[in-house]
Length: 156
Image: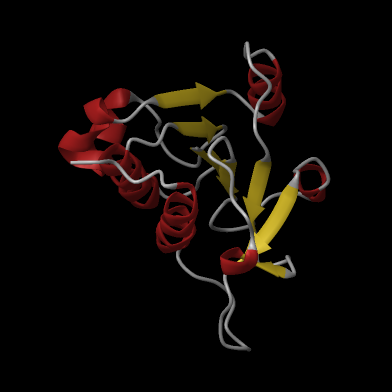
């Protein structure tokens, strides 16, 4: 299991997600450009003392990210996009241990070109009339369900 952030806008949300992934042992891909300083110094401020505990890969752009996925020695798992524009609720989706969960920009999600290249699109069911959840909250909800389904929670 991996988590990918597409051009994140808000350092504090990214820091929260990095901390979440550090606690669960989930690698994170950050696909640039980000809307904030992505230096180790800036990320340490956002992720506190959890940054050394997360496997973090930075990618200059989406194409670089996709090339890196294709170049791995084993075939990459599915790329699963969390989006408000999906019909499949996350709790009805069957996750696999090698899935990469992708979250879009806080301000704009992901462009249609990215939507077209993912393997699956899922959404978190919400009350009608409300736009979306905070990206870090969405990451926690879906990652929690994915880890539950796949038995991926760390064992103390």
